[in-house]
Length: 272
Image 1 (cartoon, rainbow, N blue to C red):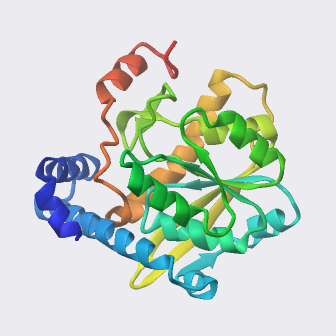
Image 2 (image 1 turned 135 degrees about the vertical axis):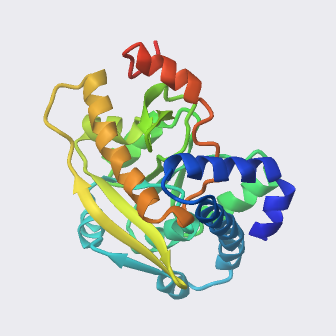
Image 3 (image 1 turned 45 degrees about the horizontal axis):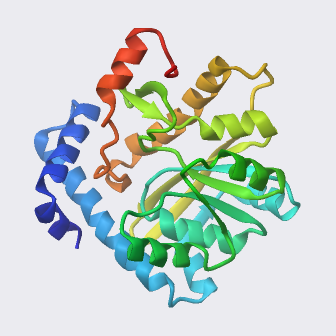
């Protein structure tokens, strides 16, 4: 399925190869093409795995994910303490969401609505199978704030370009628009951000909590948000660099690169 998509969307596939070459200038064109090919094949795997998940019992879903060093945030959640789960579009993030929801007492997701109404309804049904609260990515802050304050583990996919954020910094050495929401929520609520490294290891999906980062004790400001966001984005960057074939290169991550570059050249971290 993934390989078919490369033929259906050839321009997007070519752009993903070009993006990989820019991020990995020391790799040969053949190596970059191989990373792109595996990444697009992963899209096909995500679709089939996620669609099949609706038929599986909880135990089978959990078996598909190996959680490493995640005991602390699961314990916090069971004790009613809020937290933020920093995720990216790696491996099968949808299955990860289902498995995490099964293992937690209270879970919430910031979800990106799909353009197709029927696809969106189906995905929404799957994502909420185990009682998770879904928060629309359109104006998500206040609902997310309330969820965290009520003790939910809030999952945020923070590796894509977000037009509403207007925060700019380099991502993988290219000017980009980034989401400040994990940093803002952590600073405002005092809850930690749990950084999850996620990748495939053969047929197993590995979810490794590399670090739980508590917000710095500084006065809230745009600069404080930017500094904290840079720390969190570095965690996502490392996951891309360590497991490039597992990342969703099909997304146009640098679609506002020119805008971001102008802002950074003017010394801005945030648009007016």
